[in-house]
Length: 252
Ligand SMILES: [Zn+2]
Image (cartoon, rainbow, N blue to C red; front, side, top):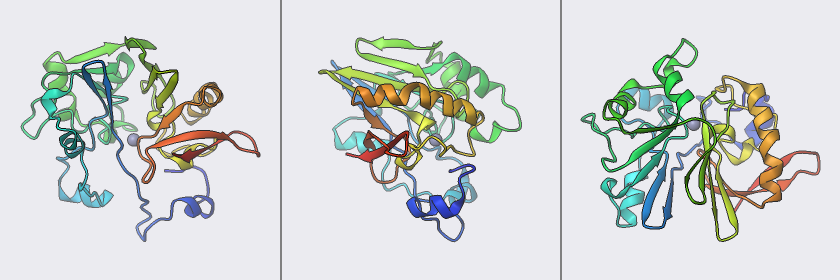
């Protein structure tokens, strides 16, 4: 999760177990805008089997479905799904156990680049994509394919955030004079705010660095609420200037 940063440094902020695993969460985001329910991310794939789940020591005490249920909502109440990208830990619950779209009344927003890459994988990215979570949505014509920055609804946009892969997108919501950014794997946890903390998973780490440099200053100036996809403790955070340069994220 920390790429070329030495473990003696990251182990302080994210202590590892004896199999070198650290605590992470999947943090989907529900946006209620007008009379629409908009879901960012669908959750971790649930059909990988025992060995796969054991590798990640998955716990499913909390799921997107329990979260929705607590609000009196079910999958049929979601009008729009935003897939930041199609990796199995982000888009894994796009589809039900029986291969049907999980959110039957929703369109699923994805970048054209990401859909192309997910359906034409190579040896380096193949393990990140599960065709069974992608093909049924494509076959049902439920993908809403966008290309680049795109306003989905007044105040709600998707924004390309390349680096982790080429087709990743973040979500920007502006409402009531405030800004929220779902940063996807550009900044997977609060500990990843310092610019050199870049995941080994990233296909284009230098692009991650450039994308962070392009946006972090702007989001800091605007006082944006930052939502990360994998922080184990704080889904929401604010950027603070680091006296040593760059930024840190503090949970709110
Ligand atoms: Zn991820």
